[in-house]
Length: 235
Ligand SMILES: [Fe+2]
Image (cartoon, rainbow, N blue to C red):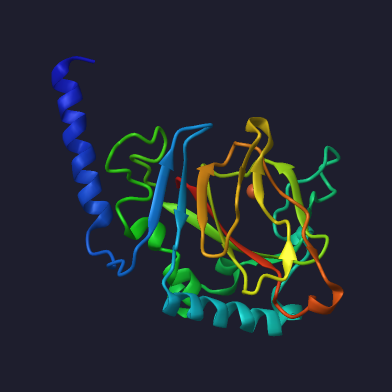
């Protein structure tokens, strides 16, 4: 590539940035965004949603929980990774794709609020340009899976079928379970999966969710661990 080509491509990237972020919602609270290339490119965000947004998210999750027979499906019906036999799911939770419930995003607060990944120009577009994958990442398709884990819930080592995966965790305080942390066994890397935090990572990196323990008396009340997973693709 000669110097002129490199310069032209530079301008092209600038234009795409402008289009991508034009007319997006303002974020009116402090997000703590950490970009990292080690042990692989990923983004960790704390304080993803503000208090009012969290209330709206939990109101929607509570609604699904109080109608769990209607909404929550077993692992075989939510695209679980499987054992070598290609049949046996390696996750133990319940869940559903929000996109299967709503044809239009406007009917779900969660589907509206989770545009935040694309709203701020600092999550998928690292202004410092130091993130090897997420400095200029512009997926044009994403799917939202809501998963819920209670006692014994886990997701063994697997890869996702997407380009990038974003996991955002939600649970109520005081916390009524232990475990449920995400880790990346090939890199011996573990992240604390606190409520209202999110990690974005390349989907081909193997990851797992540690087994959850909670008292029997706390089960069935929506006091377990929710994970909102956004699978990002190109059309
Ligand atoms: Fe996964």
